[in-house]
Image (cartoon, rainbow, N blue to C red; front, side, top):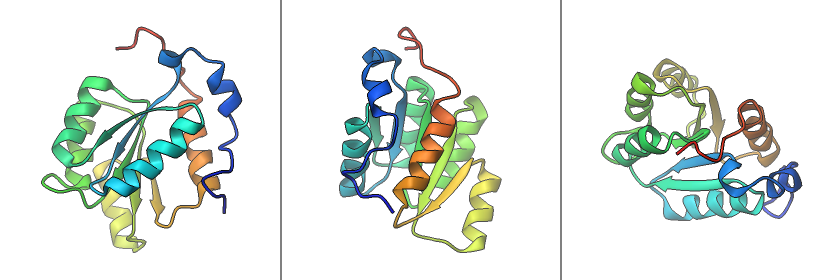
Length: 147
Protein backbone atom coordinates (compact mmCIF):
# COMPACT_ATOMS: atom_id res chain seq x y z
CA UNK A 1 0.00 0.00 0.00
CA UNK A 2 1.33 3.45 -0.91
CA UNK A 3 1.47 6.40 1.40
CA UNK A 4 0.46 9.94 0.56
CA UNK A 5 4.06 10.88 -0.15
CA UNK A 6 4.53 8.24 -2.83
CA UNK A 7 3.76 9.09 -6.46
CA UNK A 8 0.64 8.18 -8.35
CA UNK A 9 2.93 7.49 -11.26
CA UNK A 10 2.17 10.12 -13.90
CA UNK A 11 2.69 13.41 -12.07
CA UNK A 12 5.62 14.56 -14.24
CA UNK A 13 3.54 14.17 -17.40
CA UNK A 14 0.61 15.97 -15.78
CA UNK A 15 2.77 18.87 -14.60
CA UNK A 16 3.99 19.35 -18.19
CA UNK A 17 0.35 19.66 -19.31
CA UNK A 18 -1.25 23.12 -19.36
CA UNK A 19 -3.30 23.57 -16.15
CA UNK A 20 -6.75 23.62 -17.77
CA UNK A 21 -5.92 20.50 -19.78
CA UNK A 22 -5.18 18.50 -16.63
CA UNK A 23 -7.86 16.04 -15.55
CA UNK A 24 -10.48 17.48 -13.21
CA UNK A 25 -11.59 15.31 -10.31
CA UNK A 26 -14.65 16.00 -8.15
CA UNK A 27 -14.23 14.78 -4.56
CA UNK A 28 -17.67 14.28 -2.99
CA UNK A 29 -17.40 13.59 0.74
CA UNK A 30 -19.04 15.10 3.80
CA UNK A 31 -15.88 14.66 5.88
CA UNK A 32 -13.64 17.70 5.47
CA UNK A 33 -10.50 15.79 6.49
CA UNK A 34 -11.14 13.22 3.76
CA UNK A 35 -11.66 15.95 1.16
CA UNK A 36 -8.44 17.66 2.25
CA UNK A 37 -6.52 14.37 2.06
CA UNK A 38 -7.79 13.59 -1.45
CA UNK A 39 -7.31 17.19 -2.62
CA UNK A 40 -3.75 17.34 -1.32
CA UNK A 41 -2.76 13.99 -2.79
CA UNK A 42 -4.37 14.65 -6.16
CA UNK A 43 -3.04 18.20 -6.53
CA UNK A 44 0.48 17.08 -5.61
CA UNK A 45 0.29 14.75 -8.60
CA UNK A 46 -0.98 17.30 -11.08
CA UNK A 47 -4.75 16.85 -10.99
CA UNK A 48 -7.22 19.69 -10.64
CA UNK A 49 -9.72 19.15 -7.83
CA UNK A 50 -13.15 20.49 -6.96
CA UNK A 51 -15.07 19.44 -3.86
CA UNK A 52 -18.64 18.93 -2.71
CA UNK A 53 -19.67 18.27 0.92
CA UNK A 54 -23.15 16.90 0.15
CA UNK A 55 -25.11 15.09 -2.52
CA UNK A 56 -27.01 18.07 -3.89
CA UNK A 57 -23.82 20.05 -4.51
CA UNK A 58 -22.21 16.95 -6.01
CA UNK A 59 -24.97 16.68 -8.61
CA UNK A 60 -24.83 20.41 -9.39
CA UNK A 61 -21.03 20.39 -9.75
CA UNK A 62 -21.05 17.25 -11.90
CA UNK A 63 -23.52 18.87 -14.27
CA UNK A 64 -21.84 22.27 -14.40
CA UNK A 65 -18.10 21.42 -14.25
CA UNK A 66 -18.26 18.05 -16.07
CA UNK A 67 -15.28 16.55 -14.19
CA UNK A 68 -13.23 13.76 -15.74
CA UNK A 69 -13.87 11.56 -12.68
CA UNK A 70 -15.86 11.66 -9.43
CA UNK A 71 -14.73 10.15 -6.13
CA UNK A 72 -18.11 9.59 -4.44
CA UNK A 73 -18.73 8.90 -0.75
CA UNK A 74 -21.79 6.76 -0.07
CA UNK A 75 -22.87 8.56 3.10
CA UNK A 76 -23.40 12.09 1.84
CA UNK A 77 -25.93 14.20 3.77
CA UNK A 78 -29.23 15.05 2.12
CA UNK A 79 -28.95 13.25 -1.20
CA UNK A 80 -26.80 10.17 -0.51
CA UNK A 81 -24.12 8.85 -2.87
CA UNK A 82 -26.48 6.31 -4.45
CA UNK A 83 -29.13 8.90 -5.32
CA UNK A 84 -26.53 11.47 -6.40
CA UNK A 85 -25.06 8.90 -8.79
CA UNK A 86 -28.48 8.07 -10.24
CA UNK A 87 -29.21 11.76 -10.77
CA UNK A 88 -25.81 12.39 -12.37
CA UNK A 89 -26.35 9.44 -14.72
CA UNK A 90 -29.52 11.09 -16.02
CA UNK A 91 -27.46 13.81 -17.71
CA UNK A 92 -23.75 12.95 -17.49
CA UNK A 93 -21.47 10.05 -18.31
CA UNK A 94 -18.22 10.51 -16.42
CA UNK A 95 -16.59 7.75 -14.35
CA UNK A 96 -17.84 7.56 -10.77
CA UNK A 97 -15.70 5.76 -8.19
CA UNK A 98 -17.46 4.98 -4.93
CA UNK A 99 -15.28 5.33 -1.84
CA UNK A 100 -16.90 3.69 1.17
CA UNK A 101 -16.25 2.16 4.53
CA UNK A 102 -18.83 -0.49 3.65
CA UNK A 103 -17.30 -3.54 2.01
CA UNK A 104 -20.44 -5.67 2.11
CA UNK A 105 -21.67 -7.20 -1.13
CA UNK A 106 -25.05 -5.49 -0.74
CA UNK A 107 -23.47 -2.02 -0.74
CA UNK A 108 -21.36 -2.88 -3.77
CA UNK A 109 -24.41 -4.19 -5.65
CA UNK A 110 -26.45 -1.11 -4.77
CA UNK A 111 -23.61 1.15 -5.95
CA UNK A 112 -23.34 -0.72 -9.26
CA UNK A 113 -27.11 -0.49 -9.73
CA UNK A 114 -26.92 3.25 -9.11
CA UNK A 115 -24.33 3.54 -11.88
CA UNK A 116 -20.87 3.59 -10.31
CA UNK A 117 -17.92 2.36 -12.35
CA UNK A 118 -15.64 1.29 -9.50
CA UNK A 119 -16.00 0.65 -5.76
CA UNK A 120 -13.17 1.13 -3.26
CA UNK A 121 -13.33 0.25 0.43
CA UNK A 122 -11.69 2.47 3.04
CA UNK A 123 -8.90 2.45 4.00
CA UNK A 124 -7.97 2.98 0.37
CA UNK A 125 -5.10 1.17 -1.29
CA UNK A 126 -3.39 4.08 -3.05
CA UNK A 127 -1.89 1.82 -5.73
CA UNK A 128 -5.40 0.67 -6.61
CA UNK A 129 -6.72 4.24 -6.57
CA UNK A 130 -3.85 5.41 -8.80
CA UNK A 131 -4.60 2.65 -11.30
CA UNK A 132 -8.28 3.54 -11.42
CA UNK A 133 -7.62 7.26 -11.85
CA UNK A 134 -5.13 6.60 -14.65
CA UNK A 135 -7.49 4.12 -16.31
CA UNK A 136 -10.25 6.70 -16.63
CA UNK A 137 -8.38 10.00 -17.01
CA UNK A 138 -5.91 8.72 -19.61
CA UNK A 139 -8.77 7.86 -21.98
CA UNK A 140 -9.93 11.39 -22.65
CA UNK A 141 -7.57 14.34 -22.29
CA UNK A 142 -9.37 17.50 -21.24
CA UNK A 143 -9.20 20.41 -23.66
CA UNK A 144 -8.30 23.84 -22.33
CA UNK A 145 -11.71 25.18 -23.41
CA UNK A 146 -13.82 22.42 -21.86
CA UNK A 147 -15.52 24.83 -19.47
